[in-house]
Structure formats: structure tokens, C-alpha cells
Amino acid sequence: GAVVSQHPSWVICKSGTSVKIECRSLDFQATTMFWYRQFPKQSLMLMATSNEGSKATYEQGVEKDKFLINHASLTLSTLTVTSAHPEDSSFYICSAIPSGSRDTGELFFGEGSRLTVL
Amino acid sequence: AQTVTQSQPEMSVQEAETVTLSCTYDTSESDYYLFWYKQPPSRQMILVIRQEAYKQQNATENRFSVNFQKAAKSFSLKISDSQLGDAAMYFCAYRRRVEYGNKLVFGAGTILRVKS
Image (cartoon, rainbow over all chains, first blue to last red; front, side, top):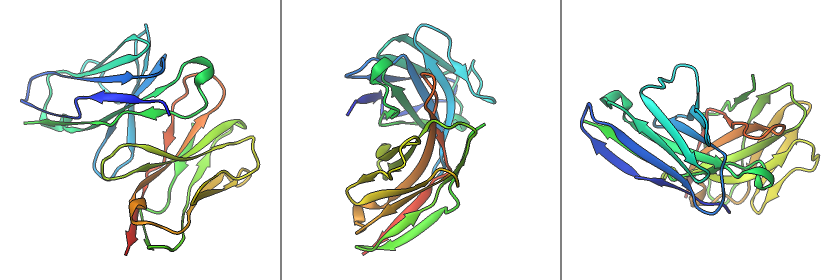
């Protein structure tokens, strides 16, 4: 199956700093990627849809200035948590849809990134 | 808007026994995908099984099978011969088929515990 790599898998930062998380599709091109946030024992909450070459579409209630998304190439999307605070501590997961005819319905997920803000 | 409902927050099953996880969904679309994803303690999302709505035949993958009832908008997952490695959180998910780039809509999840 298609592989999505997410980096870093865990990060600890100080309050007020910014953290960047990368999501790469390793063996396919992905025009669209998604970013989720997950709290313990809860479902994945969609934060935003990332489209290559255009602005991300944010879900209601998600601060676009806090969670900056850049999808500069067909294999890379980044999520930057700006001026992180302890309440931003969470598990962040990305997923990607193969472009064009390779889209068979399934989304492929990264391994997730655990962010802890001290 | 489409919604997915998993009414069982937690389920338990004895090793080697069979368990069924429930899922219902609401949509006005006729063409869509349904999925069951497994999230073990590693938190990596793993696709268990996929169903295309236009196919009447229930999908199966080894010990995993679904009961897809399109009219009732029900999509349950049956796990046969349960193994300790099946212990995980299971998510039912829906995705519209038409148009590229549609998102997955997830249910709340069911924690499955497997007893030895």
C-alpha cells in the first residue's frame, strides 16, 4: 500500500515557540492531504484540508493563524503550530489521498506526531 | 451533512470468539465508500476493510467481514476468531465517492478489549 511518513513522531517544546510537523507521501502524489487532531480515547477531529498550491480549508473553530498549513508540493504538507501553549498539546495525524486515478477511496495515514507543550 | 454513529464506546471479547461492532451512518448520497479503521496503541491508523456502496456483496478480509445494509444505513464489522492483537480502537468512516478530495467522516470509535 501507499506510504505516508510524518515527522517528528514526538516533540516537546516550550510555551510560546512554534513547531513544524511534516507529512510526506513517499510513493505517490497527493493533491489533497488532511490534518487531524486526536485527544486520548477520542475520535480524529479534522482540522483542515490541505490542497497543493492553494490555501488550506479550515474546519469551523480551528484558528488558521494558530495552525498554519502549507502544501507546497505534491508530496509534502506541513502543519506549523505557532506560539504553542499547553492546550495545544495533542496527537496530530495527517492523511493523504493519491491523486487522480490512483484514488481508490482509501486515505493513507501518517504515523502521527505527539506534541507536548511545557 | 453526513454523520457516522458508533453506539458502543467499549466492547470485550474472549480470545477465539466472535465480536460485532456496530456502525450506522446518515447520508443523502447514493455513491460512497465505507471503511473500518483500526488504531492500536501505537496510534497508527490501519485500514481493516472497505466497502463500496454500489456493491451489494459484503466485503471480507480474512477474519474480518462486514454486514452492509444500505437501506438501513448500517455497516457492522464482525471479527471472527478474535486474537489478542485485535485489541485496539476501531473507527467506522464514510467518504463520498463523487468528486475528488472528499474527506473521511469518522465515528466516535469503539475500544475493543480481547481477553485471554
